Image (cartoon, rainbow, N blue to C red; front, top):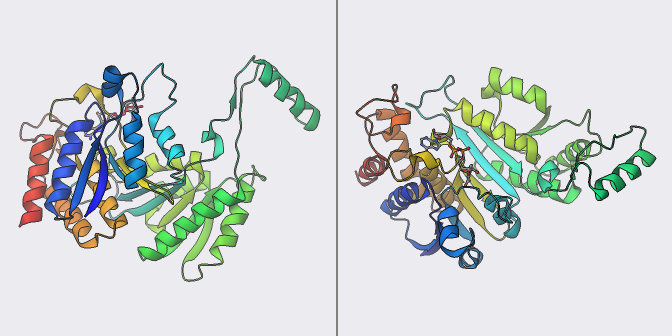
Length: 359
Ligand code: NAD
């Protein structure tokens, strides 16, 4: 038996967490769930959006399935998600983007995997606000050491990219490709302009690639990559990207396969992993049993594969795909007309998926 921390979140979180839990249990995956809270609901009760008990549970179990949480405004947390990634050293963000028959999209047969570096880049949170003393000091230093001059009315964000973190994430991408029998890894960058950060990324990617002769390697400049993904997405397989480009291209690729309702994700490190949907807590739909549970259920599929429960993962993914393809017991967002009265609720869609698993 594997113990998994289930963070029920807030907004639509509790409803989709319950749906995902029921579907995963129906596969017979033998999981013991440890319930934990995070988000604005628990903050209203206890004063913190991320109780120590939740962090402890994640540390102890090393595996979490997390429903979305609203980013609380006006607390010390920039984002609970960013905090958890840093706290548990979850350096890899994995976002498979796959076409499922029955999901409305401009493209068919897409099967891409985005591997995003999670700890560095402009996302590292090293920022200097316009007008502050530290910022003025930094600007003076930069103006002394660089040919370019920065005005005192500028704010500054720092972009660190290190050899160590790049090696780790590129290795992760290749190991993933090898494990899941993928053929190609594409490293994405802007090395022609940012020579000392993206240039380092590209050079490190090339070095790591030499250890994986069985997998094709290529690189693309990020702007060209965006155009190629729109024009010929079928040419790509696993993409590995620094944090910011990874953030942007994850959404682009989610758009290619029909949007947030079917976009699962995982944040993975050496000591643990948290599986979660790409979408947020959609507070306007909270408590209405209305939204699509598939992105969190498919995140559960990723979790089962990570736990080497392959049979159960395949069973669950097939059941989700079948229910979506049939198009009958699906939520409003998957109907051709969003006001379609035959749309079912969150829990009824989960029921249909469970029925498929059991048949
Ligand atoms: P959102 O993803 O919550 O919602 C945007 C819109 O997408 C919704 O109004 C809804 O129309 C649609 N949508 C989202 N999930 C859906 C689902 N499962 N089924 C059907 N339709 C769905 O994005 P937002 O409104 O920008 O963010 C709301 C809150 O969620 C914010 O506080 C944000 O910070 C937080 N957030 C959390 C996470 C996370 O916990 N991982 C991720 C993204 C955003």
